[in-house]
Length: 183
Image (cartoon, rainbow, N blue to C red; front, side, top):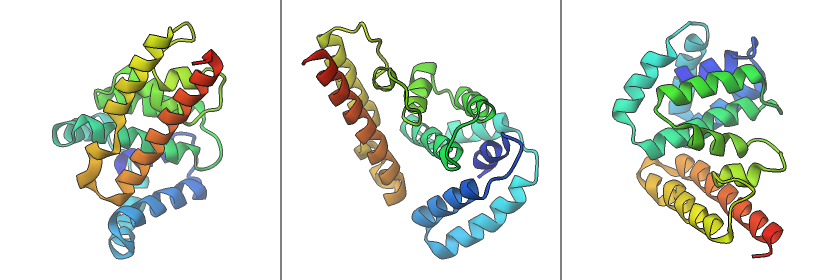
């Protein structure tokens, strides 16, 4: 909740679309009743200044890497909920990623899932346009292992939904590169 509030406040305003996104995610994860309770706490947290670093240290010690990657995906989802991601939101998410010990390649890959740029498919697979066919295939297999939804099976259906979206982005990126390279 603290990290979500940091991203929501990053651009200097609290946007209703971003709040609605968080509420929908909470409802999907916890059910309506628990989500309403969590959202009441969240509204109080949004008004406070809390150290992202301290929160991330706690998260790191209790959450596996795959779940932290999913959390980063969620934070970009919040930033994109109002239709665009500002530089201040990107900077806050980058800091959070660092605090969560998410490396730059993973960060860039997840970030690329929320932007429409010509080289996003390559960023998602963590390769360059110059990658050979074998390098593309190897990168795809690596990303499938890293982001497969089965790694989050015990966390509930809302986490699986996000994992499936991420997995779908990886598949689409691979298909785009295969078509572009004539593989």
